[in-house]
Amino acid sequence: MNSITKSDYDQILDKAAAIQCKWREIPAPRRGELLRVFGNQLRESQESIAHCIMSDAKKIQAEALGEVQEAIDMCDFAVGLSRQLYGLTIASERPEHKLQEAYHPLGVIGVITAFNFPCAVWSWNHCLAIVCGNSVVWKASPKALHVTAACKQAWDQTVQNCMPGEGFEDLLQLVEGHKEQAEWMADDARISLLSATGSTGMGKALAPRVATRLGKALFELGGNNGMVVSQHGNLDLAVRAIVFGAVGTAGQRCTTLRRLIVHESVYNELLSKLKPAYASLAFGDQFNAETLVGPLIDEVAVERMQNALSSARAKEYIVHGGEHLRDCLVRPAIVEATEQCELVRTETFAPILYMLKYSELTEAIQLHNGVPQGLSSCIFTDNLQEAETFISAVGSDCGIVNVNIGPSGAEIGGAFGGEKETGGGRESGSDAWKQYMRRSTITINYGKSLPLAQGIKFGD
Image 1: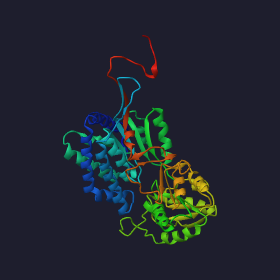
Image 2: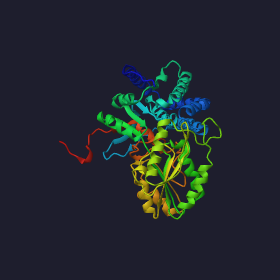
Image 3: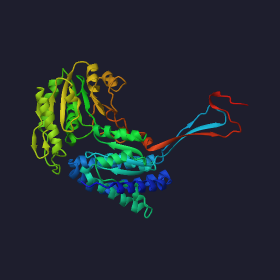
Image 4: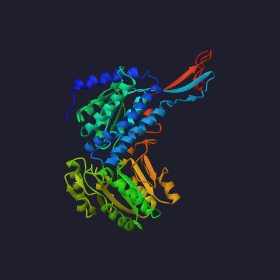
């Protein structure tokens, strides 16, 4: 693994800060135009970048292409946003005064991404940061450097074609390294916002470092996502969502379905449907067009999965599947757990699905919320009262709450992120762009007197 020196790092940050001072003066619609052309460049490069994702992250082709499509969608989103970076005009309590809010570029945005979504998560941050007038310093996972290089090449080509000779290629800088380089970024006051995606452990290590300098941070960390399947739910629809949610990307999504909380009256029926569905999955090389479940990222991931399953067997839980087939290829596992113990409460980044029973919806919600993480959640029910309860304040405590769809496959139009140990940050759509800007509250006095707020009188 290559790592840059501290001297190299400092030069990168100085360069990013310098070019951002120039970029912030470019009108936002023109910044959007650059991202429009970048989206077209990604369309032309989609297959080649997807191939890099298949090589680095070991995703199957459909998922790799879909990830690049997500980056393209983010470009389209940012183009529209370039003419909608709205502030507010607020009624003042004082005569001949006006209150306004304005949003301005924040500065240098530090982005740390994980191996499992090496293109999409970067694009969430990059597209918003750029359209908001910032520069980006990107430290990608050392396991996905081919993807990083391909994305940087597409960006450089776009800038050279659209804005030749202006130096705006430097708006995207790469930092090669691992833990030490991530710590440099967390400690660096030149980074106005650190957006970090990865494990909860990573977030807990970096967050205090950012906090020490009173910096801004956006964390998207672990998820231990649950699905409630009601006796009023469509089981066939649920099976489709469960299988994709639990085994897609070989269980290596932050939104992977890891806990299945099933009403006791339909538990056996649902399990009887899941077993043949799992058995029908095509396992194998991710480059084989027929493969639906590719390998885990490395042998360490395989070992963690097998250790978790050994712990489940030691608790006398029934384990279906989970065998280590060859190399980094494993068979997805269904584990019938009798309680939500520490093992179930802990996220294992592998295709392990724990099944639990419930009798009342309040019990199901309590089980669902009874984990440290709070990313994505869902319920399968055709009962309106149950659905509305689950999405209400007394329902799911997650950042993403779904009804009759699984926990994975979020659209870019909505803000993405979660609560509790998931980190609390929001990326992608909605008003997530505001995190990449600084807000100014502006008061304008267009009169000839100086009245004070709250009716305060000070002298004559």
